[in-house]
Image (cartoon, rainbow, N blue to C red; front, side, top):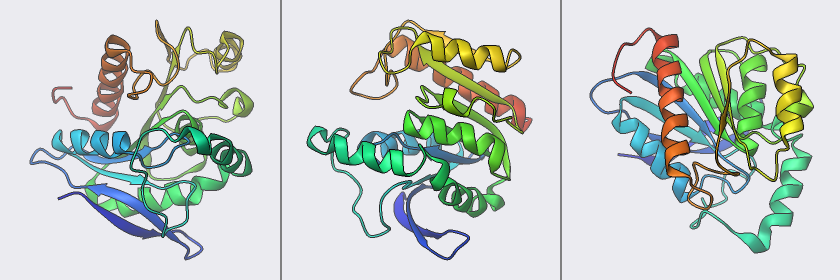
Length: 227
């Protein structure tokens, strides 16, 4: 049964997280990194869905204190400025990497560990691909500040997903990334921002991006299972 748990970062500080145990066919561990809003109902539902496919999932809270309740809604527009300020203060995910590492370490007994992230979490996942240890593959969805960290060099197989009509991530940023990493799979979709999330969902793009993500994890993890 899925539940809220508490992890411990390397410095001993507590980290709240959502934990979804795997179904019968175990595929490994999976760290899901949330967008700016936190461990929302969408993130928790996605965690449960992927756990049903055999992943042991942990979605750590990247910005909030350990005693802060998880959000009850996927969006909280009145608090957008405050949330964005928190993201900026974190270096758009750089300061959250000890929390990501705590989640990776907690899944070390689950087999190979993968990570995916959305928006703020997409940038954090990009940073984790080069700075964290214990990952096998990473999928980054519309990470708005990946271009600012374009000199990072992923240590594991990594793919990126962007929407062609995303007003928050100009195509010039995507071009900067592809120029710096010509061998990196960068997928473009006929969609806007947050095309996997309920508020911006584009069904065909979301389905294809998740299919590519699970195929990456299966290839990197040595599994030939169905996506």
